Structure formats: C-alpha cells, structure tokens
Image (cartoon, rainbow, N blue to C red):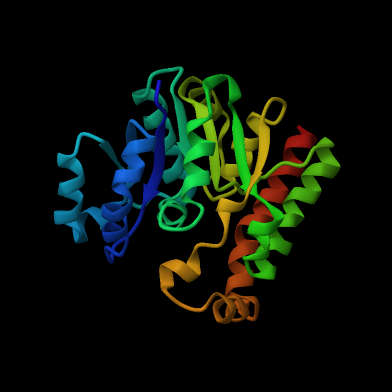
Length: 254
C-alpha cells in the first residue's frame, strides 16, 4: 500500500501555494494521499488556493481548531489522519517547508528513494538530520536542540530526536501515540517520541538540510550569520527545547 503524507499548513500570506503546485507531481508520485491540517486564517485569506486543493482528490483537508495552540493543532491533525487512513498505511508526518525545499533540490531523488522504501514493518522511524544536514543550519539551532538529545541520552541511554522533522509511522501506531500526548506546545513532539522510544528506529539523512535560504531566496551564509546573532532566534529555539527537557525529566520521575 502506498504511503500518505501528513503536514500542517499555516500560511496566511499564501507563499506556500505556488511551491505546492510545483512539487505536486513529485508528491503524487510518492504518496497516495496528502492529509493537511489547515488553519482558519489560511483558509479565510487564501480561499481560492484552498478550494483548488479541495477539488483535488489527492488532498484531504482538516480544519484546525480556531485559536488552538500549535501543539493542539498538530495533535488534532494527527488524530484525524490516523482515523482516516488504513490502519497498516504508513503515514509520513513532516512539514511543507521541508518538502518544498527537498523536492526542488538535489536531494529530491534520494528523498524519494528513502521514503518509498519504507514499509509498515520499518516503522516507527524518525528521519533525523545528519551531520551534513546540521552543518547547513545556524549553530544556535544545533546547539540548543542538542540539549534535549543529550538529556534524553543521559535519561534513557539512547540518542533520540525529540524535535523531529520527519516521522514515518503506521496509522494504527499513530492512533495509539496520540493518546499519550498532553502538552499543548511543540514539546508534544517529544511526547510522541517518548511513546515510541523502545521500538523507534533512527536514520540520519542529508536531505533534512536547512530549508530557509531556499524559501527566502537569499544567501545561506548571510542568513546563517544573521540567525546565529539573533537573540530572537535563540529565544525561539529555547521556547520549545526547555519544555521538551522538562517533559523528559517529568516522564522519568513518573
């Protein structure tokens, strides 16, 4: 059975839709269905583009709960996708900005090979950023997220990605995972990892390279320097990594 892709879509300015049109043939060659959680403001401001998606049977759109926090929005989407898909179907939980970059880059072929090779018995599987992929990111991104990875290794004796970008999981597994999520912010991704920590596989990939320079059409070097010097960007990473670490400690304490 061909897998499906699952991602949230919050884009009031509509910048994603032209890219989505470009990568759509690639998406349809890899996946049988796209389950999208769309925010109310995106629906209201991009009605024409959203209606075009609704007319395409490849897409199933789930409205996000108005005013819900980001973690609750993700949880709503994942619950809906788990219910809608066949229990044994592999779902690729990821993010449209990553897909946009990957499928218009030199990583496209390897991404397609890696994703299409995944069968239900290979799941749950986290595709994580390789050292090459991390080298493309600003240093503050890497160093701060590594706090959570290191703490997790100290607590569980295993290196896990608690702020993952791409998780492959069967719909039946996802249905069980979401029952163990309680956090309302991005630390809910860590709760999902904790739910599968005993059996999850990790695979480092280069195609999770930093996507922002492509999306912003700017110099990777200049943007990297700017983000590394930005207090706001550092605070942004800490805003989900600190709750993630607290979640890990609380989990161990029972």
